[in-house]
Every structure is written in C-alpha cells, then in structure tokens.
Image (cartoon, rainbow, N blue to C red; front, side, top):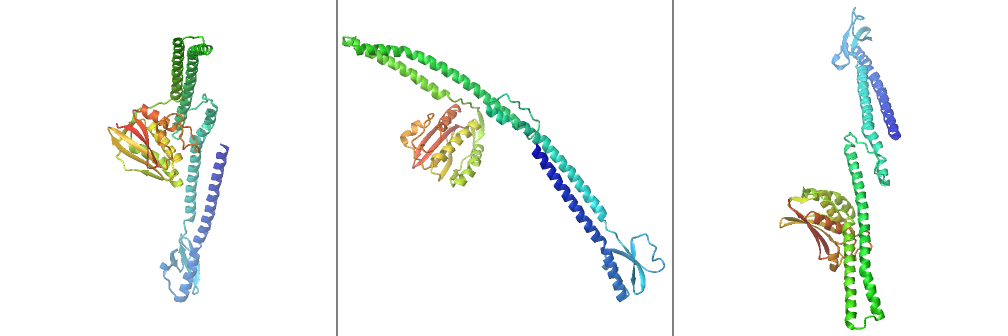
Length: 403
C-alpha cells in the first residue's frame, strides 16, 4: 500500500511538472505571436515610403490603414506609424493566446481529475482487495484452512476469490480423504496382521514337528507338508490383498462426465507446450484431424495429455513430438509419440503400474505415476490407453469415446 501511495504521488508530481512546462511554453509562444503585428507594421511603413502605396493582403495581422483627421479615433487595436512624413493608423488583430492557454489548462485540469479518479479506482478495486488476499496463500501453505477469504464483488478479483475458496475446499476435502484413507489402511493392516498370525502359527507348528521328527510315517509327514503349503497360500492371498489395496487406494480420482471438442483440447495443449518446445529445438507436430465432440472430463483428459507430453519431453531425444488422431468403433484414438525411445519392449506390460519406472529412467527425475494416472483416469471415463514401440519411437494412444 505504501509503495502504491508513493507511486501515485510521483505520477501526480510528474503530471503537474509537465503541465507547468506546457504553460511556460504557451506563454512564450503567445508573446511571440502577439509581436508579429509590429513587424508587419514596420514592413508596411517601408513599403509606403518606397512606393507611396501598399497591398494590405501581404499583412495577415493588419486589418486596416487610415490617415487624416480621425487618425487617433478608433475602437479597434491600433498603432501609429510614420511613412514619408505622414502618420498612419494601422489597425491589427490581437491573437487568442490567452484563451488558448485557458483552454489547455481546462483540458489539463480535466485530465488531472481523470488521472486522480483512475488511481483511486485502481486502489479501491485492485490494490486493496489484493492486499486483503496477499496472506491467504501463505496461510494455506501453513495448513491454516480456516483463514477467512472475504467474497469480493470486484470484477477483477471476484472470480479469483471464488477460485481460492474452491482451492481451500479441495485441500480440506483431500485432507479428510487422506485421514480416512490412513485410518482404513491402519484397520486393514491390523486386520490382515491378525489374520496372518493364524496360518503362520500353523506353519511354525508343522515345521517344528517335521524338524523334530514327530511324524514317523510318511502319510503324516505328507499331511503336515500339505498343511504348510495351504497356510502359505493363505498368507500369499492376504499379502496380495494388501498389495492391491495399497496400489489402488493411495490416490483418489474424481471424474466429472461432460463433453468437449477435440480441437479445444488440442489447441490448449499446443498453446501450453509449443513455446517451450520451440525454445528447446524440438519439432512439435499436430497431424491433420477431423474435429469431433468427445465424451470425457475435459480437465482430466487434458491432464492425461500433459502427462504424455511431459514423458515425451523427459524420455525422448528432443527431436520430434507428434500428436495424431484416428477414429475406430465410435471412439477417437489420440496418439502422442516421440522419437528416441530407449525403453525395452518387454517392459510395456508394466509401464502403467504405479511407481514403475523403466530402465531408461535412471537419470531422469520422476515418480512413476504419470502413465498410472492416465490408465486410471481413462478407465473412469470409459476409455482406454495403450502403448507401443515402433521404429525407435514410443507411442501412447488414448481411446476416448465419441459423444
């Protein structure tokens, strides 16, 4: 606020200085213009002295030349000149310099009032609301979700405050889901650990009996071994359930069904990445396609696109990234490809698993979630995603239903 106040003072001071300089310039111009009639009067006197006559059209500021008894009687502005031992009354026009200066100052005054009003408007509708919101991001980062966010009627910040409130609600909902998820996982772990103890105890008892030779005949030994195997299968099933729960529930996905033009999504992606890829020298191609309406969550589909482009940037050789489209069985097949693929074909079945990173990711930062998220999101939208490697290029295709 203090910086803006200083800025306003500086702007007004500069404006007043410029207005003063303009007035000084106009006053000087006025004095110069009002002295022209004297120059013309001297030229007129010289012409009369030399030729005995004159042409008044040569002198734009002189309106009349008179001599005789009424030389000193006139209601107009005039001066007396002598030419050829004769006195003449020369009438002239007076410039409107004074009125011009007054008009300019009126305009400057109106501009000053307009500037003052504009600065006040900016302060009231932009600076003050922004100042009230300046601490909100910091408080949200600290985890203070109860920080007050006053609704702003200003058209500049109304939507912004609404968006910040949505962000706060989203963070709060995510926190609640995380707490619920942690609670469920804890109960699941406790339940599974309890369930595992029973078959584990049976395995230990049978193993000890076999180790000590308590079972003399072969039939009892075989039964003990089969019991161990059965209990081991139970433990394996519990571990499988645990792995499945951990891999599926650590992230929450929400999809809002809707419709969007294919061109709108591709245009957004191109605008997002074209400048960045141009700087890095990567060729970014959008193959010709027929526009259509997709049945999808536009934001989620754009997120999938971003994950694929980011992967192409990180794991490609930087020569070319391409987007191509095709139609098949009521679906739009949108393929993102990049050159310089070093992933082995045998790893393709695992690349959509959570936290999986291929053998080409050793020197690249990442968490192995990009393709996993694409898989889950596309599944929730009723679509599919698959990958392929051809001629040293990596292809990922999103299958989206047409509306």
